[in-house]
Length: 310
Image 1 (spheres, helix red, strand yellow):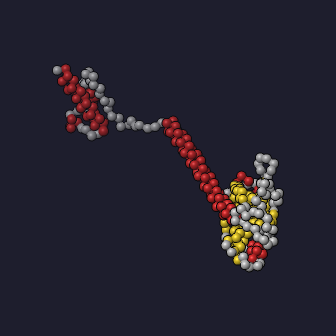
Image 2: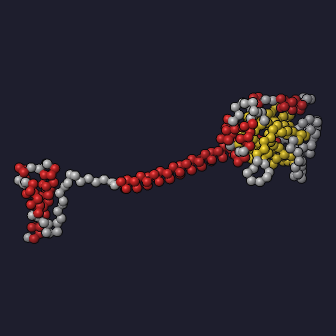
Image 3: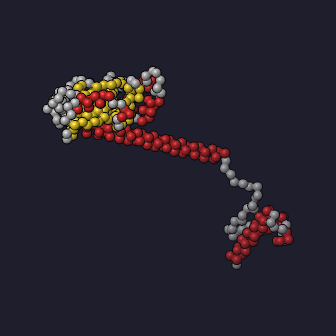
């Protein structure tokens, strides 16, 4: 009996409050349920929920839920911190990708050029005639002071010529750099090659003459952004002969040759080129800029034994 009475009271209370909510919204009328507004409140109090049930508060149309100003400010601040962290991470990732791309570009350029140089220099041969067999002469030089230490980096752009032999032909091979400015700096590396039959009496003289008179547009380009190209000659004991420029005319040749190649990073090279628009200052502004970019120069070096040394 007690439980049945509790169920009836609870059901009546729910009915009254549901009707009260509908009446407040204007969807219930007296004729529909037989209650006035005052009777609704009395009826609600008639069911105190003594069996443990809790009655619901009447619905209020004026009550709204919203965030406070402090909550909004905290949310915006947290969002700003997250966005700054993501931007910093994106910037670092992009920077690392650019540096990696630059390193790959420079390494590929240097290794490809060194591979061609070393393959050719390994085939140097001497001849019985007194003509130029090996020559390295400096066309220009650029000195770059170091940030630490007293010895600067001296970048030489040498013109290199040597003889090779393939079957019954003499092959004259030469390398030179066509710099951006008239006073040097950096530029494209070109490779000269020409073959003449051994039976021709003046073949060696013609090969050397053709090399000295060649122009960049007539010779293929091997690499770009070259700032340093130099040969160093060593005797059989590994001692440097001590000459920056040298020429071997007789049948003797050095026992070893060191090849040094310097390559400038792409962005630095483009800025160097942009600073020389062909003005009559002979590239002073561009060369002054390149002088301060020693940390943007990558050097490659390899020692080559001369197999045909006598």
